[in-house]
Amino acid sequence: MVGTYLGRKNCDFHVSSAETFSEDRTYDCVVACAVHGWVSLSFQQFVAKILRLLRPGGVLLLESHELDCHPEWAEQKRFLLGHFDLLRSGLIDDVDEGMYASEMREYLVLRRKSAITP
Ligand SMILES: C[S@@+](CC[C@H](N)C(=O)[O-])C[C@H]1O[C@@H](n2cnc3c(N)ncnc32)[C@H](O)[C@@H]1O
Image 1 (cartoon, rainbow, N blue to C red):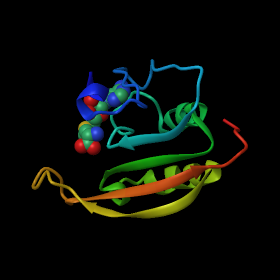
Image 2 (tube, protein in one colour; image 1 turned 60 degrees about the vertical axis):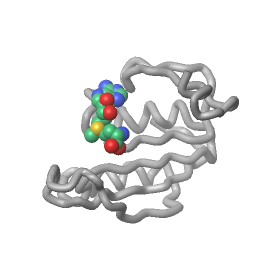
Image 3 (spheres, rainbow, N blue to C red; image 1 turned 30 degrees about the vertical axis):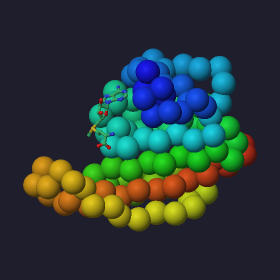
Image 4 (cartoon, rainbow, N blue to C red; image 1 turned 90 degrees about the vertical axis):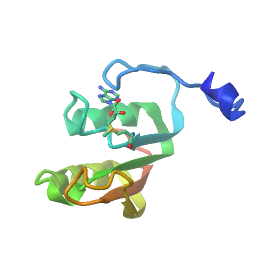
């Protein structure tokens, strides 16, 4: 339905939790916007799940609020960079003014390395 609405014939849309989503195929791209802090998986489990869904060389766009404010973010970023090459990173303005202490969201565009280890 969403694909039809957007006029996209090359996209499938599934509604699922990150925990239960399972597919035999791999994808060119995974987009995770302000999600990793909300799932019941640890960051490492969440990234391992993404790695199973992403083809080697595939791209992950990961972003969230105030990443630098989280004490665990430095370690999580190190973990990510063990599995991905960083293509680009930066800050984008959050439209939810006043909802968070900082209105900036950090994003990383990462390319999956060929070898899969977790
Ligand atoms: C802070 S909102 C972010 C919404 C939107 N992606 C954005 O960037 O503004 C957190 C999102 O995580 C989703 N979410 C929460 N638990 C989830 C789970 N277990 N699996 C997948 N998505 C989940 C919620 O439905 C919600 O859309």
